[in-house]
Length: 277
Image 1: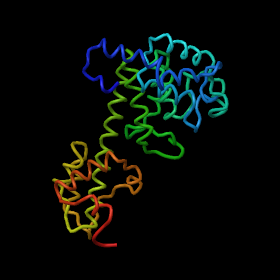
Image 2 (image 1 turned 90 degrees about the vertical axis):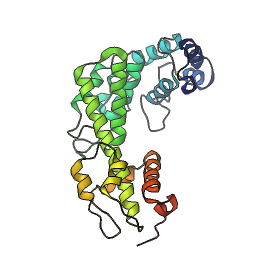
Image 3 (image 1 turned 120 degrees about the horizontal axis):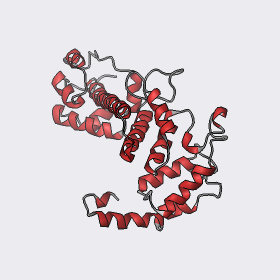
Image 4 (image 1 turned 120 degrees about the vertical axis):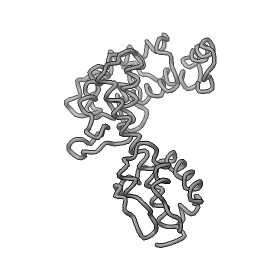
């Protein structure tokens, strides 16, 4: 479907119509059981559950108005519950009521909104679970008070899909914008952390100007001024250690681009330090 970006609407519709009758889309639709489920569960860790398949069908672009979509969603709505797939108190929940974890509920909310189902209850719950830093975390509030990248992205997709479905409300939009700000800030911190760690093991220095280029417009000015000049003997930026665990290729790629352009540090030097222990 991405190859059809900018193409006339009739071409997009014609290609989209093939999803339910050809290829992976048709195969996934055919695998639904009579009880409405895929993989024998509303959700599981095997990535073949009802929730996971509906996410795939959404990502493939299955037309919600198609007969096939209406049929499979009808079965899910009428027959699938969370029995055995989550906390006991959720056993009686129908599929589009969700369970308790925001990362799972967000994905259910996203597919529900996309396919025209009533997910208002899920959205209301997600709004109530937004953390003070603007994001969401499945381990909050008992085991964590900070947000999770993955959970926040899931919720942002759900809120945006809900708005696109015509259910926009000031509270939903406000929560989504706060979540986007959280994500943008920490995305910038990830890129900045890569710069700082890399420069610890080279003869180059990172200045506040370079840090600003790496971090974009979302880093607090006080943090940039604190950085000043960083070399292998100084590490003044108190970024959480676990932040490095979340660095994905997207951030690495952008970080390396800044490293190479501003400091002449290569990918090899970043991965295999040439100075220090």
